[in-house]
Each structure stands twice: as structure tokens, then as C-alpha cells.
Length: 377
Image (cartoon, rainbow, N blue to C red; front, side):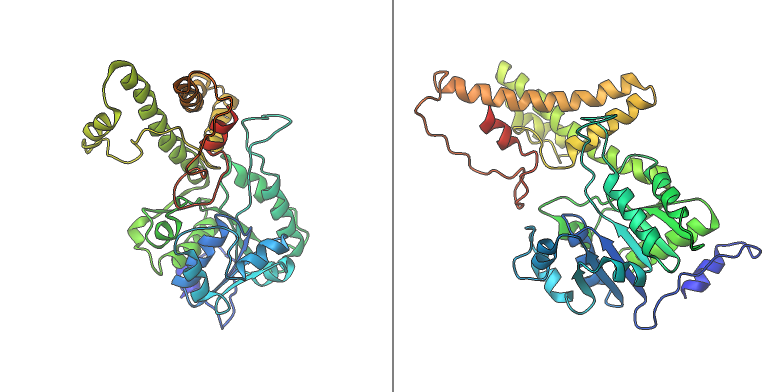
């Protein structure tokens, strides 16, 4: 049925190379990167698609050993049960990267893209060297045509870089690059993957690109209603992830700015949040005041968005989104100052307990957690 679906969306005079799949499996997927995104995403795909073979590969033997044990390398509610129901059947974790790349029809790139610490864009731009290394490895090892899927959060037009690297292969192979950003939230990742608000797939608006996108759509459509699977061009898909996180972080900073006003005027921020959130146009989610947002995504993605705006000469846009970060820093500092002030402006010889160090509930992730900055201050 896959060949038929490809032919139905292409012109008769255009020859599209078919992505050959084994008789045993409908599709074979390889995911490069066994972290917070790759592991849970592939585990859910394997659970929901018994006829799809999924293998997560990583250079880190300890990480892979963790995924093959009862003590997973990350904590996420329900994740262990999901892994156990498919592991060894159609879900595998391996360090044999070359073998899995060769046999895969679809390869997900799900590696870390941290904020650059040096060079052009340091402190704001995302470092995509890991994505580039994955692309070079795929081009070197592959012996057949493949669909490459960006799962990592990347700057707009990263697909161009990946495509250029892949096109330099000397074997005449054809690679199609897609963007499929994740929208899962730590603490509810399994639920988010099993019943997502939407799945976004971006691809080149060519017959070959559309065919590749439909191939990936056919995987998700095995358990997700087609109306919730959105297909766009590559750049819209890459940008949508940054914008989604920026909007969520903006809401946190907005209500936190109001919390400062409430403390100064005697108003109750919780009552204001409830009153405002009952407006259907606004909604109640992400309107609870806090010490500030944390985690690996929000600040990194906003800084990336700020850098992109600056790069394209949109200074006012860059300043607008940078203010979300400044407000978050202000809230953390304000909380620290308030705590010290309540202890007569000194913490000498005093014992302070921090109840909850992860950046949010139901996760063990402490990356960029506000608690860390509070303790430091």
C-alpha cells in the first residue's frame, strides 16, 4: 500500500525511488539518541505499532544498558511499563549504530542541541554540531535510500545543513529530510505521546518530499486521528517548536510579573489567575505563579528565537522575547531576596530545606531548575 500511496501523489512522468522495507516489518525505524525525547518517543511508537521495528541507538553504553534494564536512565510516569511491553519484541536499544542505520527505512535524529558556549552566537544560538555529526554518519554508512527525521529542537533552516551533508554521499543515494518536532512535556510524556494535541511533520514541497512525509504520517496514523497530524513545509515545522515553547514561557513570565504587582498592592495572584483563566480566549493553563520556569527547553529555545530575530535584523522582536528571560531571572532573584529578608537579612547559622529540586513535578530532571539558582543566591 506504501508504493500505491506514493504513486497517487506524484506526477506520472516523475520517477520517485521507493523506500524498500522488509517483509517481516512494515517499517524499520532507527533513532539516534537515547535521551529524554528519543527513548520515550520510540517506546510509544513501538507499543502502538507492533509491525514497526524500532531501535534506539547511542554511543553511551551505560545509557543503553539503562534502557535495557528495570532501572531506566530517566524517570517518567508509566514509561517503564511502556518499554517493557515492547522491549525485545519490536523495541530494541543498541550501540551498534552502523548496523541499525543500514537496516532502517526511517532515521530519527534526536540528539542534544545545547546553547553555544563559544563562537558566533555564544549564549543564545543552538549548537547543532551533534545533528551534523549524525548526518555525516548516516551519509557514510547508508547503503540504501532513507528518510531522515529531525526530532531535536533546532534553529529554522537546519534541515538545509543536514540535506547538504547527506547530498555529499558518493553512492548516489537519495535522502529526504523531514522535521517532526516533539511537543511532549516532562512528567506527562507518555500521555502526550499516546494522545497528542497534534503531530507536526514538515517536509520539502516536492513530490519526493510529500511522499516521504506521507510515509511518516502512515506510522503515526496507526493510533492518531489523521485530523491531528499536520503537514507543513520544513521551515514552518522547525519554527513552530521554538514558538510553542516561547508562548508557554511567556505565560509563566506574564503571571509571575503580576505576582510582584499583587504583593505590592495586596491583591491575590491566585484569585487573579483564576479570574483571568476562566476567559476561554485565555485559558487556565500555565497561569500559576511560581519561582520561575526551568528545564532544558524554555530558556534555550527562547534564546535561540532571540538570536534568530537578531540575525534577520528584527531587533524589536528580539528584545520582546528576551524580556521573557529577563522577567524569569527577576522572579528567581526576587524570591531569593524575599527569603533572606524574612530571615532578618542573614542566613548565618540557619538551616534551609529545599522541598523539591527538580524543575517540575513527576520528573527527575534538574537542568536549569530554579531551585539551583535559589540555592546559589
